[in-house]
Image (cartoon, rainbow, N blue to C red; front, side, top):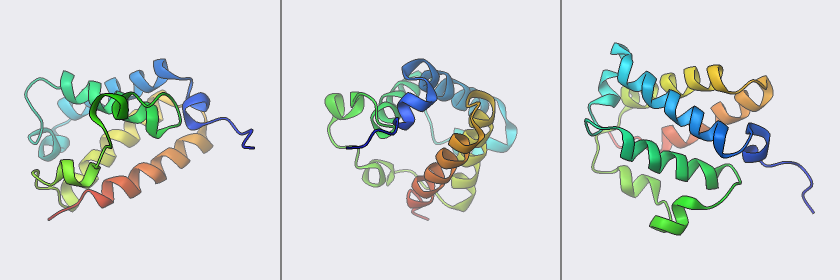
Length: 127
């Protein structure tokens, strides 16, 4: 039996995940060096923000909000229409790492999440 808390629990649940996602998209929207990844998104980021919140909820060990609403994430397939190369991956990671630095207090948890996000972001490359 696994008695360790999930990342969802360690982060602080829905409130912290929502804060992480909101800060991530604020950074993407504000930082000129994130232009490459920002231009791949709709003008209104609220839909992407809500989907990422729901995805991260389940991905981190919390409620499977995304799966319940949309089915299996199929991340790579869902991202194939968007040209994602090293630059876009790196810009996404820059925004996520900055958001993690601001929102996640625990350094070890921050490092674990950053490493996991890096693997996922690298897998999304299709260029």
